[in-house]
Length: 417
Image 1 (cartoon, rainbow, N blue to C red):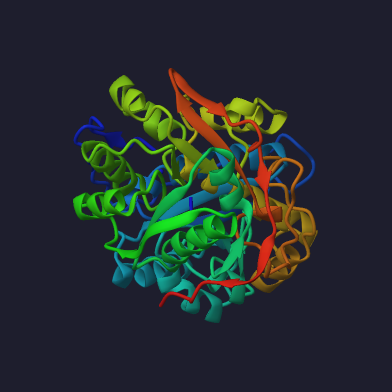
Image 2 (cartoon, helix red, strand yellow; image 1 turned 90 degrees about the vertical axis):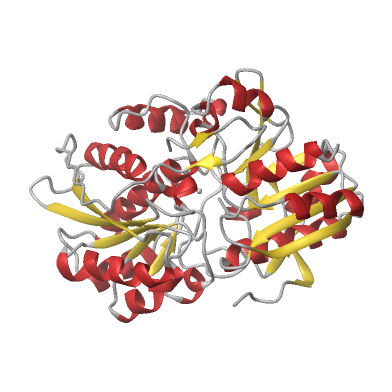
């Protein structure tokens, strides 16, 4: 559910998100030790599997900056880390070869997965016993593959929680629309799950399309259908280019949603699009599993300080949160292993033993038991933070900082294929 850096939104009047072409890269960065916690003489190599080009680049191409910030965090913990990057091209047939490059050619100690298409390489990575840390934004393999560990939990989007419905009701919605990508199981299922959550809260779900073409901005038919269904609010479980195009199309149809809830687009992505884009997005709600920097907690301030080492001075993006917390999880695994240079199996076992992962403090008071593979639908304790775009930036939403819910018994979504 959640993904992005240096995304250039055109004016939200046209609202096409321009994805600058990025070639696949093999970047590296390392940091020295400033603590006695780890072993400064041992260098660990992470392989970043991410969508630098193609449609999903609009949400993932800033992940390298997040990893670089994570390397600064690791240095403070006494660990020296470098990384290499493999681009999926947002192409299912390219994901596996990218993962194989990282493991067989670059000989990484673990894979950091920040990709909408990780599922296409998951089976091979599991068969090879490769430790994987990252974000479960793509599919259910994070639940079933014991070598894979997500920084906001192995979310099960076939289940339904009260969280989203509570939020829509709190903000005055009465009839919601929901849209998700057909190619991404988590996107498709999350759209359906949110609609059911709204219905459980006593709202109407007048329009649900869980089979929208991946990355498309041709949303006029959806906007017309939503208007016809009388929706006054919507959730777009998609990348920012699709979400903002839908928002613009609805406005062209004369529909100004009470609640436009987007799982991506918060922070630097929107801010870097210029004052026109931010102005047009006024009133839009942005979801985050991690603490927004507007909360000014010790964890968010440390995160922003580490981001500066990667040259990032704006608010962070989803992909930067993802890359940063993935490195933090890798470091937590090294600490739990208790040995220098643990084997892949030792690292996997150590990661599974972590009982209270807090994502370098960015999960707030809610933590993850990494061995828990069920019951997590929208983050630890089924919580998320909500910000709202207002003049000059974002503000946290009272009552949703965070808002938490519970799994609704008997309510499920059919698994996407």
